[in-house]
Image 1 (cartoon, helix red, strand yellow):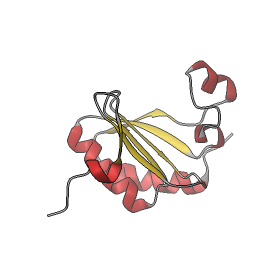
Image 2 (spheres, helix red, strand yellow):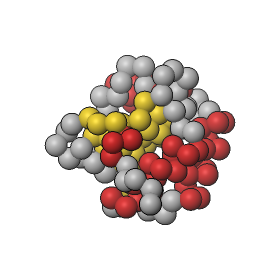
Image 3 (cartoon, helix red, strand yellow):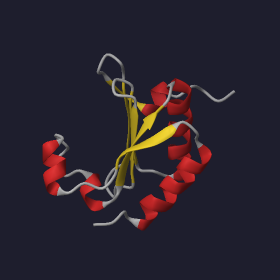
Image 4 (cartoon, one colour):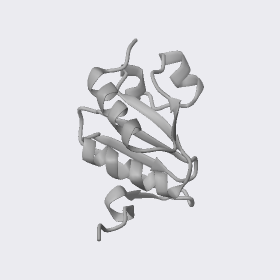
Length: 115
């Protein structure tokens, strides 16, 4: 198993642009994915997904903006668990936020407007 090269290059760029992120989960075996309750078709199993822990809300916002600008097709900001999931899925793009109440909202409704 290895990280997909497109994912690696985008991750490297994201980490270079945003301080306050730390690696939480990267490539998973089938067994590891099952053990942690991952999605059956998780992109982590294909080396195309990474979970990053963020220090604070400002870091989460910056990371989400940068991930979108870098072209990650999957972005999930989880405010309940202080992590951001990014992936280079080949299916329909998925950009969401899990609020502190557990609600799922579109990323575009959560990111502040640019001034």
